[in-house]
Image (cartoon, rainbow, N blue to C red; front, side, top):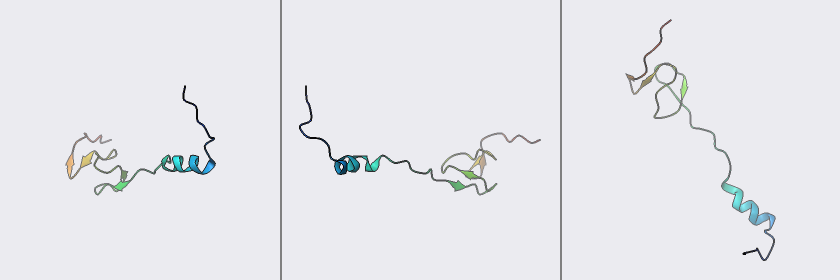
Length: 60
């Protein structure tokens, strides 16, 4: 069975983990209702995307 010959140093371990961080999601603003939404997706509050309505709006 393969066993490491030397202990992995803290520096090398940290360099390996350098890309394992969380990134904040990109958030854009809906041009119709000004609510935050993910880019290239239908707005969850008004249901429009690029000026067209995709989700039926629930009017109270």
